[in-house]
Length: 114
Image 1 (cartoon, rainbow, N blue to C red):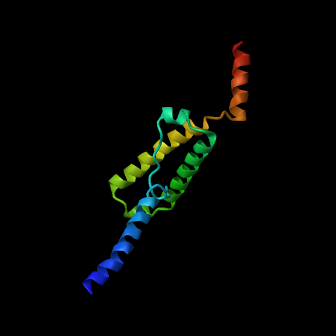
Image 2: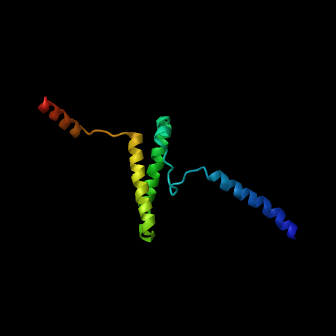
Image 3: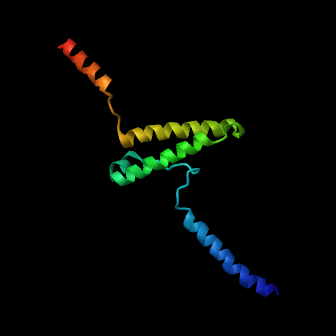
């Protein structure tokens, strides 16, 4: 009877751990986003950059939906720093855009100065 249990449990355990190992590569919204360095970011294609931005958006949405009242002070601070890092990284990925109003003000200042 004991051998019979082992014979049936061994394949089930192997199957379970194999699936767990395969799922580790999948990024979940509740897992922190691994931010690439500037060198890695420079060699990324546009599709990879868009995928990274989408991962960051999913993570931000997950953090906003979180119940933060049950978190400790250190966990809340870690979330804040993670959000700040993602904000800096998203600016590096997407770039900084100048609004039309700011552009008009800059042109007017240049005309006044010259």
